[in-house]
Image 1 (cartoon, rainbow, N blue to C red):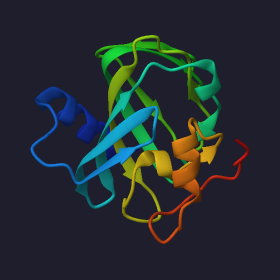
Image 2 (image 1 turned 180 degrees about the horizontal axis):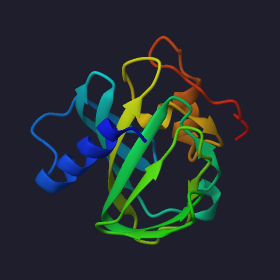
Image 3 (image 1 turned 45 degrees about the vertical axis):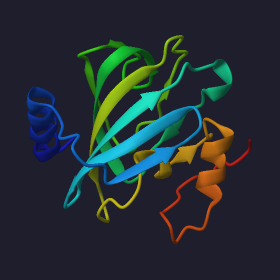
Length: 159
């Protein structure tokens, strides 16, 4: 994690994100996301996860993106990066090379993701910069769409 990403994520968590205007909204079936800010290589995205089930689980990574994710609602059992169980107010830094996944979330969860993109400016959702098992049939479909819409990084597309 770069000092810029760390400083930006602390500032956004302390003062709250600007939710006045959505840059983009994505429906992944079991999860919704809203990109709420983009400045150069930094992007801020709000994720709302529905109740999750075991079939949604699978290790993945985001090969072009480092993130600092802060839980706003619910609890997120996290596998990878020390396997913490995150609750509202907790943050975790995830390197672009870290394979990770979440556990079951019986009531769902909401988290804010502050991202630093490498090699290009952000132009899509973090969930579309993906290598690993898709977490829903809608996610699988979006990853397979025309790559001119976004860069897809999925190498495992067995669903």
